[in-house]
Structures are given as structure tokens and as C-alpha cells.
Image 1 (tube, rainbow, N blue to C red):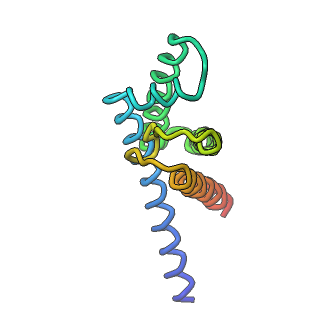
Image 2: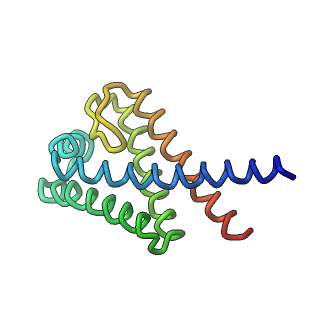
Length: 146
């Protein structure tokens, strides 16, 4: 019984740590894009062939969405829905990483961490972030049902 309680406390600690890691990731990513939007703009220009106004709008909206999600999670506002939106956002990042890797894209917007060059590293980073987000969301749902 004591082992079960220790195991449960370890799981709670892991859930809490991954929750705050996700918050830090969203806030860091949003702030870094606001402070230096150029890498994101260059990545959007390299991949999407739309007008410059739409590119600037996307580069402006994405950091705002990331910051909003991070603050909502930090303040625990509608956590379940916020985690769902964050999961969708990270799935989009993953698909974008796959597409960029297949296209041979060499620049990186630095969405989840400082920019690195190389399609495989970018893809693995995206898989890691999505996996962590799915795990966080699923653990949160399981925690609500217990």
C-alpha cells in the first residue's frame, strides 16, 4: 500500500512538472516570436505563397495565441479546453515540421526551442512536444475521472 501511495505521489509530481513545462514552452515560444518575429516570417515566406499582409497577420496571431494559451493554463482557466487547443496547435506544428522536412526547408522558426538546422531534429522535437502534450491532456482527463 505504501508503494502505491509513493507511486501515486510520483505520478502527481510528473503531471505537475509536465503541466508547468507546457506553460513555460508556450510562454517562451510566444515571447521569443514577439521579440524577434523575423525567423517566423522567413519560415512562413519559404513555405506559404500568400500575400505579405497574410504572412504578417499569421506571424502576429501565432505568438498571441501561444501567450494566451500559456496564461490560461497558468491561471487554470478552462484547462481542459485550453489543453485541447494546445494539442491541436502542436499537431499543426508537427505537420508543419513534416512538411518542412519533406520540402527540404533549412530555416526554423524556433517555435518550441531555439532554432536548429536539420529536418530530423526538428521532426523529433515536434514529436516530443506533441507526445508530452497528449500525455498531459490524457493524464488530466484521467485525473478528473478518478
